[in-house]
Amino acid sequence: MRPFHNPAPLALASAAFLFASLVSQSAQAGISVTQSTSSTVLGGALQGSGLTINSSTVTNGAAAQFGTYSGFNGSVITLGNGVVLSSGNVKDTEHPIPGDVLSTEEGSGGTSEYNAYGAANVTNFTAGFDVAALRVDFTLPTASAVAFSFVFGSMEYPDFVDDFTDAFMTFLDGTSASNQIVFDATGHPVQVGSSFASSLTTADTSTAFTSPQGLIGVLTTTTGTLAAGDHTLYFEVGDVNDQELDSAVYLTNLHASDAGGTGPITTSPVPEPSGYALLMAGLLAVGVGLRRRQSR
Image (cartoon, rainbow, N blue to C red; front, side, top):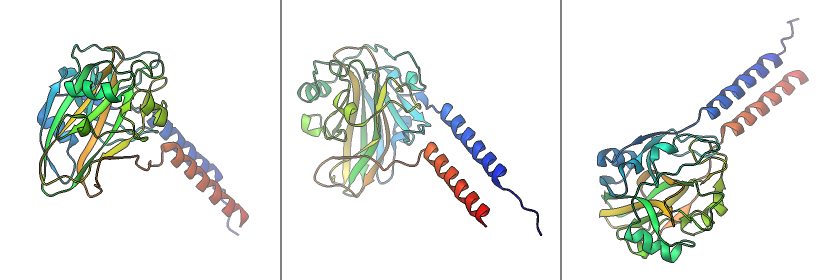
């Protein structure tokens, strides 16, 4: 008779190693940010398939408010590498800062389009400050929609969600109110307050916007079908009603899409399994395997 080999110790040790690895990865989570206003660098970081980004030009704000990021792959939110704009210093958004807040006054005001749209559509809006505005010119080889994904975070949460409603806006092929195309999951302009009420998370640790501050989950904006040829997007994020407490937006994967309809739509991607979920699935599989072996 073959000696019985109990697989339980080895299986449990493997599960413990997996758990320790996942905890370690979670603890080390944090994006890496590089400041840049280079058209080539910013355009390259945002470039997706099916279109050509010709230029990426800063139209408002200080150099410190623009850059690229990588490593946004925390246990709660995962977002591809891309471009970051902030009402403060983008470098400051790199890591969680428990018990502290980001507040850098860059000295710039709001753009005319940011102020005009905000006054009519953003809660308690008086004026924009420290607005970081990036113009992206691109070409479509054939008629199609375009899409991009983003995450918006703010230091205004949780204390100032009514009076200082920092906001993110994007204008397509013009800067009038009708050209603004980004909205939250409930169809409202992306702002502190209503947007945070619909899809807030304070648990992600990839950026400085972790508990008690917060982020809205990943959203994807898809335009209506655009004609072949040249087009322009204006991405703008800023402080509202004062220059204190920073907000930021992370943008990724500007690409052509076949999902266009008659107007811009906002969707929430299906989330990938988190490390915790994968761990639980692995432990369940180990348990099932042990029961089967022991029942033989």
